[in-house]
Length: 303
Image (tube, rainbow, N blue to C red):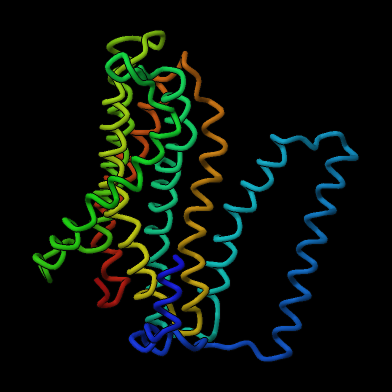
């Protein structure tokens, strides 16, 4: 990140389009003041809600997380309504934003699975994985978290070559999303297999975790970079920066869902947990396949 910033300062920004350098719809001083007031009111209201929960005796870590989850899910819904109903966008731009909504939902479902690597799979690595390597070294459970960036670095050159090689013949963005969801679901079905074979009381080979991460990172490269690209292409001119924020709200919404469903994960119901979460992602991917054509029509020429 530091070297990226240094390269940008030393002249890299000259290669970027003007939309990356200047706001397409800058705030007027009066609008900035109004926005500051709205943000301030939002903070005050949030504080009052917490105070009310404390007075009622319902404030706890669990209820606080639930409140944040509700906000994380409600925020993109409200902002989609604001963008779609805005008079600043054309009919074509409005159609593209509507096309973006199912992709946003798909991304949220994916992140709800992918981000469980630092929760569910981390617990699995700690408690149910044989981390002894050749009887001479114990693999720290935290090391498994390095598998995410490791596989990303290994896969990225191949995917970069593949999309260039396919050119205009490559699948559309919605098709990549549907495939990514299905593969993400498979990574969890994969984790159900060793528990069904050996039970939850037997520590399994770390190769199972390695395999699960290897699968889900394929899905990430079908969704994350594609999502960044399609967000910029579908963004209305008046909401270019805000739409990029919306993309990261998909991760936020996924984390919100994640924070609620991980409560049902226990060693006793691991098979059901992995199977249900995995199948939900696969079903969502199948549904998205049937929506590819209408989404492409709404995208108005964007692939």
